[in-house]
Image (cartoon, rainbow, N blue to C red; front, side, top):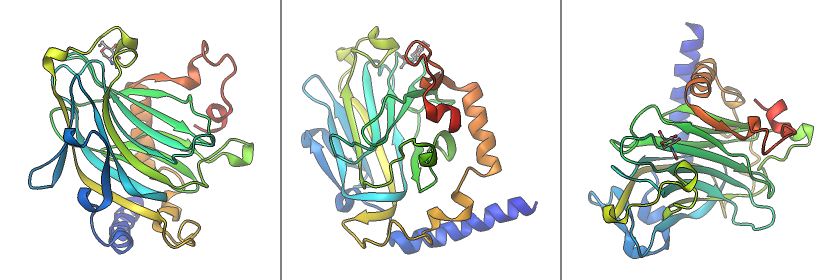
Length: 287
Ligand SMILES: *[C@@H]1O[C@H](CO)[C@@H](O)[C@H](O)[C@H]1NC(C)=O
């Protein structure tokens, strides 16, 4: 019971602090700009949601105007309904630095009607990626909006779906494993065609007779240290996301994370012996 009380209390504090750091909810118009094919990005629902379109001519994408160092970014996404095979919808953070890229990826790989969408996550730290994991979702992500978030502090990065952690990348710098800690990252989203790899390894092609394909985004929520911004922000230990409650998953989160890994994970680079005869170090130390 005491634990429950603590969790409720910490959620309460969390909300208070979130309000004081960000001041207002993020808005598409104020906080983002289109990166690619603006005629395919449309505001709907009186500006409350964004629609991305993919057709034979083009996909499209958008990015945050600021970059951020640590914090939490979340948005609600409703994926392409029906036959989405060969499409990829993405939500990711990227430092935009070629050689020493840091990147945290959610990629939603479409599928034929009735087949499960796959969520692929990846982590690049100091230029090194190739850390794919895949889970099949436990609901139909095209039927409704669901919340996808990236939480990032000095201790770990946590990818969550509806507040259920699906991936944790721990800071194991002490063991010589790189951790994205120095570079701010922008928040990106995009929709594009990738039928050479996305669905069943590229076997399933896009059915263009079903185009255009639409994905929807809303409720952008960004809490973190904006860059440019106060240079002392990122290292401030009193930022709520650096608090004791956030150094590791709480018991409830740890339990749901285990549930995801046991029941919904379909691929983990950590156990792919054909790719990695020697288990990558973060897989041994990290999980
Ligand atoms: C698509 O559906 C097939 C068959 O159910 C499944 O094996 C696969 O993991 C699903 N996802 C992708 C991206 O291919």
